[in-house]
Image (cartoon, rainbow, N blue to C red; front, top):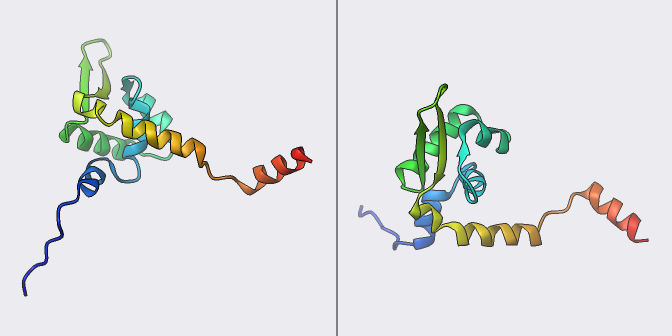
Length: 118
């Protein structure tokens, strides 16, 4: 039986690089400034050290993020966008705007806002 190949999709290609549970969160926090590993770990709640390492390595392999080791005692590592990564900024900015405009409301918060409006 012959394998059916789907046509190439640029959106799917983008999602392949930046998709998944953690990558967009990581990219959001790297968008405006370089971050150290532990800082990213604090900013992305729920991510394990191993998963953060794997996601950063993947983004590094795809040329989105660069890793800089500073020769200090103790040494520290900083992650930042590459030129290719910076080209994602308009996409991340648009996603941030959309998320702010369409933020899901929580029921408890909704009730409190309704009570205040009365």
